[in-house]
Length: 326
Image (cartoon, rainbow, N blue to C red):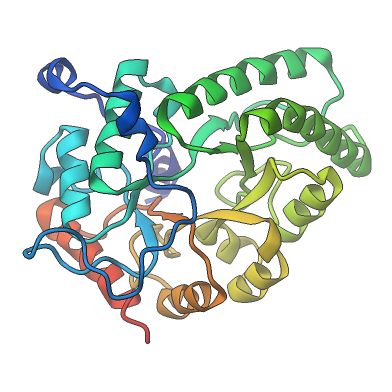
């Protein structure tokens, strides 16, 4: 059981490859890229997705990852996207998007445009094994320069503006306040690169039980850093699974950090499976987000409580239930 928990996050950093047939047959034009759903564009309430046989769209932009519905849709990500849209979902996400070949990135972006799916944040930098942002070191900035270059290139090809970053481990020998100052200065430097390109770094606090030793763990800490950086290109990704373990008070912390939150990751706890398998009241959380006016993406960064197609249908039903708030 413990080994499964350790693997739960790693499995969402894996990427699915497109088959040779799809890669060979898929083309993307500039006009297709231009039709990507803009960030935070809200579909009118009650509007259904195109096609009489398709279920009504969800109220919020819940975003499944590639692989979530493989048993139902097959292994090809483009077919999975069709299935996702057909179930009424309005978004997808792919943590490993920067690692895909450019042609594959463009194929995914083109399919998203055709299906009306917004693409959620990808991972730009998340090395849990090293001290990075907490140090005042030119070699760290050179490493970050390379990561940001890849993120910006990915953004230009796909239209995705949110790039997730984890500030790495803390330093046991350096006073905590100096580390915080270093993180802020490094992020100001990163923002100077991202702002002209319209790319937004989203910082993700992670819980110290699953990931001991990391610098960023709490929403209040992330909020303090974003306020100190003072850039529209540095915001927060609120992972509800992690924050329930670290500090709870999910809705209270959402409200306190509201103007700095750009996106969400989802997962019930314990177990990091779909809503309804743990202790969180996702129906109330989603209702609060909807009433507050949230129009961004909520990434399904969790596993399934049951294997195969049965488990996939259980995930869909869980989100239908949670999305049925009035």
